[in-house]
Amino acid sequence: MLNILLQDKTTGKNILWATDSYDSNGQLFAPTEHITTDLITGALVSLIQPRALKSKTEQLYRTRDKAEVFTPLSILKQMNEACDTKRVTKNN
Image (cartoon, rainbow, N blue to C red; front, side, top):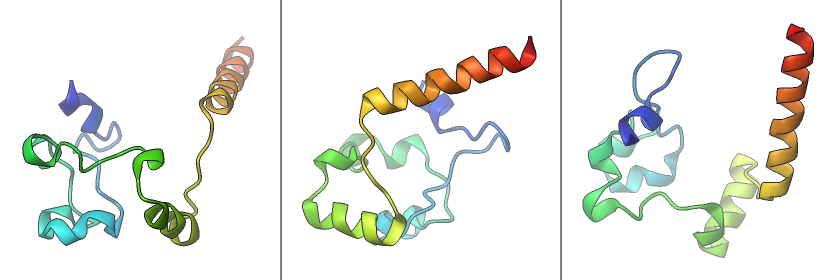
């Protein structure tokens, strides 16, 4: 299942790290490298964390430098439902 989640549906290759937040772990974690299951399981299983579990310092850095913000689940649900409604309406 994890292999499916890591796959870029456009290229068929694995998605990229696309951030320098993990490159202190080595070259395989560089922004241009593909994420593989062995890099995020085993001893590194806690490497990728939800924003809420990251330190306040890391959250502030990511907000300032990457425009990353927390969006409540209820808002995400509304956004997805709006997209689904428009898609169904557009195709009909």
